[in-house]
Image (cartoon, rainbow, N blue to C red; front, side, top):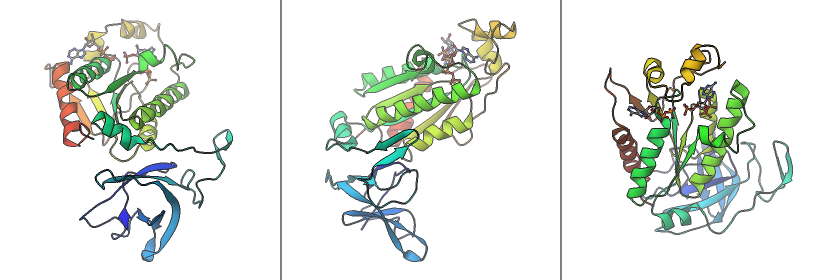
Length: 288
Ligand SMILES: Nc1ncnc2c1ncn2[C@@H]1O[C@H](COP(=O)(O)OS(=O)(=O)O)[C@@H](OP(=O)(O)O)[C@H]1O
Ligand SMILES: Nc1ncnc2c1ncn2[C@@H]1O[C@H](COP(=O)(O)OP(=O)(O)O)[C@@H](O)[C@H]1O
């Protein structure tokens, strides 16, 4: 029996064998592979079948892919089931024999989402591009999803009221998840002011693959920079609901990386990018 890590409540996940280590199952936690089935360990050591292994890749004997039979965490036995997800009725997941692991091996990296949050003017776009540039020079494939840019197309129907910001973030979270599944290091840079919206995006990804980076720059510094003149307009009452002025920004708790402004000292975008890249390296994202 093999223990499984990195599974969300969605219908697709990755099995990580824990060779030579005590498996999750033995610890009485989580999911494990049992032959062709995926089982959940319940109290008292009981096992409940929750899905099937659909693709057993033996790439160095390390990882395999799995489709489970659960919709939104509800128990189900058969992943061939016709499902209803939101307003989409009578749909069925179709899996492909080329999977995330194949793409990661091809690219020599692991897909993930670097989620940069902070006030307007804190340097999110600059940092995203600096990370992308440096990783590109190291032969790593990245893609930047910038809030401002996505609002020029996919999200041009959305305003800045709270529910539209939530939808903006939800869509970008879903797109970022697809990029990560493609094996790409996806860098999302958007204000994303609400904790619950950021948490919802985190929940879309397997454990560890959502890396929240808080660009902690005080508002007076952002306001001094004001490269687009938006703070000036907001202070003059010409933009309503501007983040940090008359709209909230909820500071992250338990994010992976905090990049602070130390007094009047500002680290350069390259220095900040290097901190994020060191984290990726340490966590193994720069190798398949
Ligand atoms: N009311 C209001 N509040 C905040 N920002 C505003 C607003 N109106 C326009 N802008 C411009 O839109 C950019 C933020 O878009 P995001 O998609 O990142 O915002 S959010 O995540 O949905 O909150 C933001 O870009 P950045 O400065 O790059 O953060 C602004 O240029
Ligand atoms: N690390 C930094 N140090 C000093 N200035 C910076 C830094 N990062 C960005 N800037 C400057 O701050 C302003 C806002 O940067 P930007 O990346 O557009 O922020 P955001 O995307 O968060 O609105 C720009 O004028 C940019 O040149």
